[in-house]
Length: 479
Image 1 (cartoon, rainbow, N blue to C red):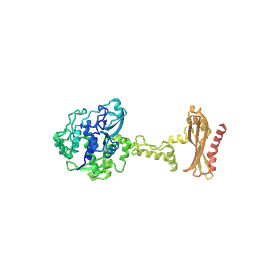
Image 2: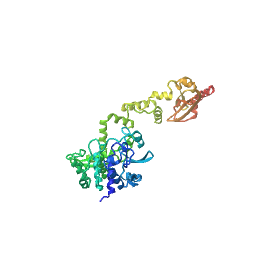
Image 3: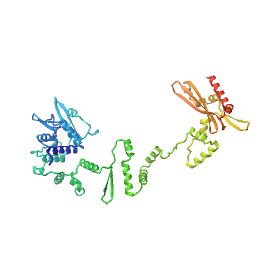
Image 4: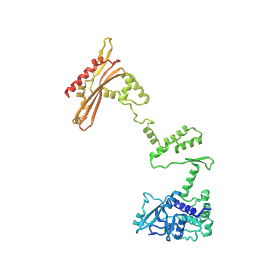
């Protein structure tokens, strides 16, 4: 037979759990309270005589008698809370240099019912909230009856607003031995909270009549199955599936959750595969098709953002990348125009920067180069072109840097380099304008090109190097 201690502790645990959805308040653990208007004792909340309440707490190991006064044992309360995983808390607060013990029952709400400490309640004289807990007090009284505590009087409770609480006679109380008997008794009393027995016979027989009861029932069902999904037989004798969906506060957490190997989305796919005898790819395609149909705009924008499909502004190969591709493939200007025209006609848009932008970047069309050719003894013709750096700076200075920034110029750096590849030798020049505000304006352009398959320094000197070198010498002397 279950001990009196366990019956009392279970009764208190069930009551505190059922009170979790209610508005929170601080209550005095014992009847020796400084003000019942602000901190009503547990006995008042539970409609039980104070002496019987104190005796019950002593039997549960939560209080002890000292010099005729019942005093709470804080460590025992902490163990009790941890054992039953209760959402309550106990604390002490001194009033008029006398320590009092309080227990918080219910839940705080950040907007509608913010957190308050006992000191705040005492200073502001905050009364307890109005509660409708007749069913809970009746159920608790039955548990008290099982503890064989005689003379359990019922008193009026100012916090009750809907109807008067009542406790059955000792004969009826002694007959209440199981939860099924309690549910049957509630049905006999005609509790309006119980589900309709004709529509929900099983819930009615179990006595599930509050949100807390329903939550605990579902939690136990999930725990019993031990998985993220539950398959059951529906009324039409076909299988149905309940999937545990996570509850997170941020979209990033949901994104992390859904990308796990085993997630609720994975369970949805498995469910479709099982019910339709299809492949996983077909199930995923079904889900994506439905999402596209219901949320087309968001679906497409996300695909574009993730790079799955191209948007209205396709990414183009930049000037440097395009020119490097053409030179490495040894494609001349005429063949490049033919290639780009066919690609543009096939894809409907261009994916490469235009020839005019490439010429502007490398050849600088605004300042025309000097074009010439050299004929070798074997009659090999070597076409080349160049731009003298000194003349280029004079002509293009305004396009290189803004006139206002030019006033801040402290130092001018000119870097010239060249390399042979793809049957051509190319020279580029980079101009760095270093300003007094510690910023730098850079300008890069091509200043020479020699179309010859061999990297011959003699030919390079005779074509572009001497001429470009002369321009750099003049710049150095002038600067």
